[in-house]
Image (tube, rainbow, N blue to C red):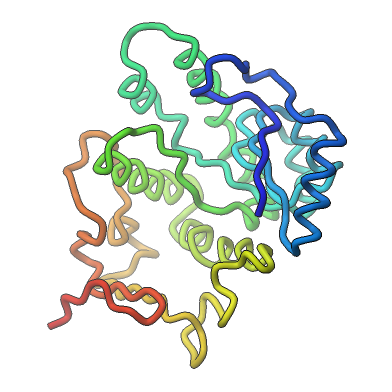
Amino acid sequence: MNKMMMSGGVFSSKDGLHTIQGTDEEVTAVVRASNDWGTYATAHVNNPPDIQRGLRLGLGEIMHGQFLDEETAAMMVEAGVFYNPQLSVSSLEAIERTFGPEPSVNKAKSLLVAQGMARIPDILLKFPKLLEKTTFGVDTVTVTPANAIRNRDHEIWFWADKFGNLQTLKSMTSIGGDLAALTGGQNPYPAGSLGVIEEGAYADILLIDGNPLEDITLIGGSKELFDAPDRKPGEIPAMDLIMKDGVIYKNTLD
């Protein structure tokens, strides 16, 4: 996977969200080089016209798409691309905690992004085929390890609240695995199957005491963001076993 910037960012101070970055020739070159390596090109891209340009030029994934509209969502379905939006950045709490009470260019851009991202869950629900190619991700703006965990846990809860627990789990696992499989020689999982328990597959297993289809907090989901208590990776009470590629990192079954 090769990523480029096709729009302005929130934390950068000199490029507005409206800016168009990369000529058609430059984007096409990245797409072609990615395809030559057997992988795909993705882009940080904000606005519908720029997303549509990326689709026309052959992107395999859209990242962020903060101002996505229904016309562009329909085009993404037609193109068969993946989407990674990082939805909980629409949290005003996160913006206030990150930028503080004083106005700034970056805070103003973040508030605009929040307004755009707040519309995306409804758009995805109107386009279920796009939702089925939307991967879970966290674009954390929190600056400490503990807050990064809080941000991820809140994103899990946010997804489950908007799309249901099953869709959230799929976006975190099988849909992400489908995208990883498109990375070709860069695929971090080249030697076996993903998402199945069988001989020769990657032994990535979580054993949960309970049913996360009914309770998303069993895998860490948290309605609270900054007010959630501190926790370290793996410190989820209902998660009794964590195995990654056959190596056990947590086992409380005994």
